[in-house]
Image 1 (tube, rainbow, N blue to C red):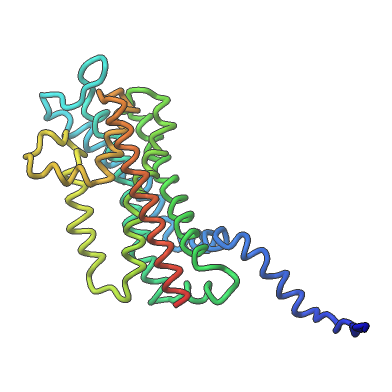
Image 2: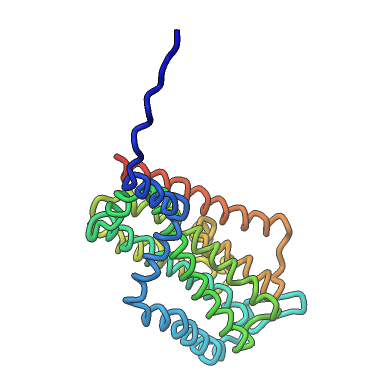
Length: 286
């Protein structure tokens, strides 16, 4: 018994072109999304530049030439004794800047993509996968964090506000890690919202502001009342600031403590990312 196979149907050039055109978005979709977000940032690019350079300049001038002159008692100590106040506070300001970027890029931008402009739904209708959309957002926000952290590091060097000049190469990395540690859980939260009913304003007022004020930014955490210490313990800002001071001027810290700070930051960033990606995929495919 023989089975004859008829001639193959002719190939459809349009279908072949569509399949070929879907290969690159499937492979590089996250980078396309990141490119879109970075191009969108050009509409407020001047704000990014001014906040990335002007804000740290004002802070360093105000603290290095202003507030520091009123402090008679040193608050920061390195291996060789007390350090200038501006050296003590500079790592915290750098970290705060990247966390600020996270609060901007992972709140209203996400709501805009899902509800106001609905660009995420348009991307999802293309070969770009939902997980790639989330990844592209993080890549674009990470690029902005790198710019801000690098600008801060350059100004810190210019103000001689770093104990070890080589630390200016490491501090931006810690800043970006802090931004992601705060931003990934925030991204997951924002992606879960159907509408903005004041939640983002509440995050700014009741999460970011207390974290900025009570995470050892301007004074050591142990100078605060004991009942406020927990804010620092759960704050990625405090963990990154402590590591920044260790890198900058050798603030006293055991290896175990340093590794604990690092582990908390990585856990927050990784855990938040897994949750955020799952929410993106569930919402865009549901």
